[in-house]
Image 1 (tube, rainbow, N blue to C red):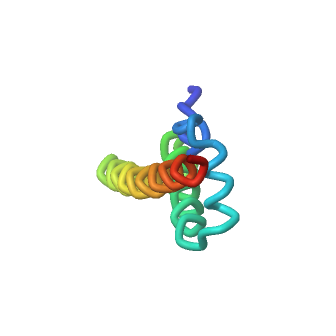
Image 2: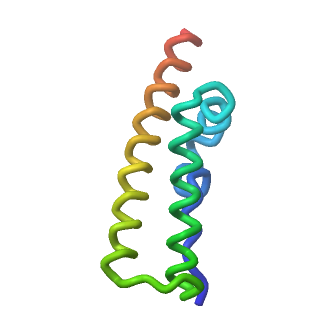
Image 3: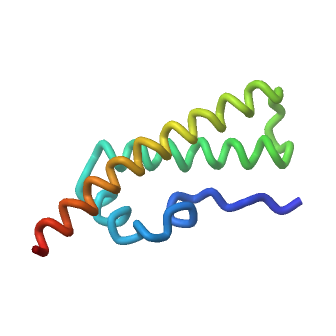
Length: 88
């Protein structure tokens, strides 16, 4: 079964440039980004039954991934707003 691609760039393509900039220049963003992708990989392995996990465990991982995505999105929006303000 094919799974959805939940990579951050795939989920938020409009922030591709900001993702790259923050990954290179912001250690906190990079740590959250890495954690997001690690969780994403774990979830994919659970969905493909490479890793055995209960439905509860899988749902907890998905909730954590969503919280990370929200935190990353907030940082991306701030970066985007700062970029627009700098260009003005």
